[in-house]
Length: 114
Image (cartoon, rainbow, N blue to C red; front, side, top):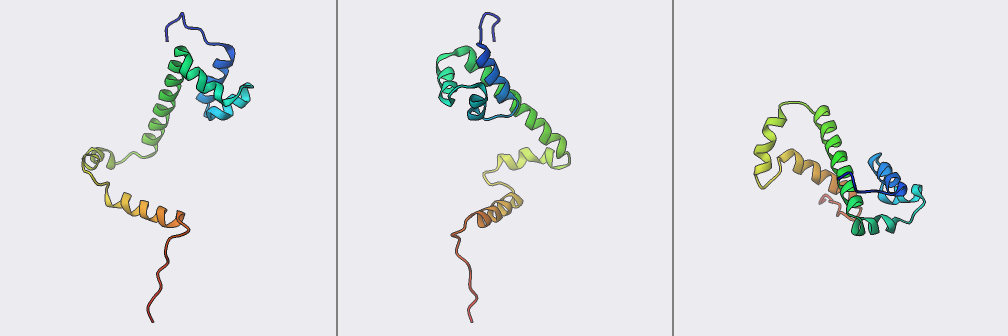
């Protein structure tokens, strides 16, 4: 952001709350504004839009670093090879199937034939 761009104190407060992990709706409520105001700032204020993009980038980078620090191991060098294929590895497909089965209350149940 260039030094001549100025954000209002309310915009800075909303950005700080979002950077700290709040949703846009929660940040707006805490800053005393309507949630649509943040959307309006995104469309109408290049300085706010750029600042929010930087906040999102920083948060994504932080969580990526956290994930990498929690899961060191031999799978990291192999990740690009399975990412290049069209199918995820079998363990990921099995986990996804289990999650789908647990989260879908209308999933058919199997009955044994007598």
